[in-house]
Length: 190
Image 1 (tube, rainbow, N blue to C red):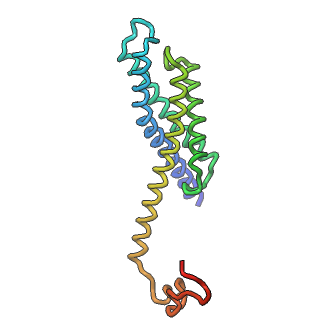
Image 2 (cartoon, rainbow, N blue to C red):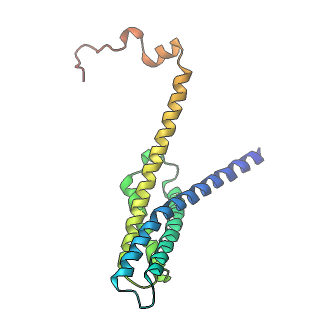
């Protein structure tokens, strides 16, 4: 009995870890192209010291944004588990989700700036991009999770249709057959 509980606990933790890594990779894939654009803007704006080529600025920002996206997505998954607990996706508010993502994005952007991960040039642009990316990534994550959840429910519903109901179950769920579709007196049809 104790072994089964331990096994289930380990499986649950591994499932959450896989989810955190998956969300981190998803965020990294979304953040990297934005980092490239930010690097392009910074590289062509003339604020980069001489001797640093455009490709180096774009590549550095792309890798930094991807790394921050991975860390942000992974941490967001953990914080979400702590804050929202066992709530279902349909119970979560999209604006609240996006707000948590924005807070995480600007926090990561500030940390990257403090640690000099980004290098020179337009720190406000980078912080703003990180905040917007955090909000958009969180909102997108919730939207995708809801769609995946809806698809699972639809697939489960198809299996239930295949099972079918007995005549007695149908009467129990739907009421008396002679009452189905009738409107009580004194009420209007919608």
